[in-house]
Length: 114
Image (cartoon, rainbow, N blue to C red; front, side, top):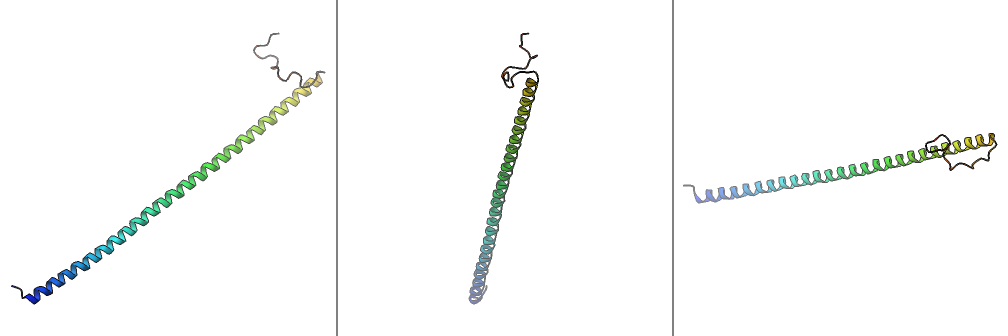
């Protein structure tokens, strides 16, 4: 049998060791939770950055398409104006008044009655 003094000493030592171990476990748990918090924060920051970049790319693409459509529309208007000028010049060369028959379809198209 262990003498009482030694038993008390061992019990105190064991209690002290358990408390130290608990403190170390608590420290490890705190570190682990802190790291987990950092991982989650980093994940959401990256997701937000990716969403922002995706939005900026979509807006840039939208602006490019808008600009391309505007340029195409301007080219079409210029082509139409040029075609109208050519028709006016041809009509003037034939002695006709320019711009009179613009709404009528050109001759030779389907539906004309000769």
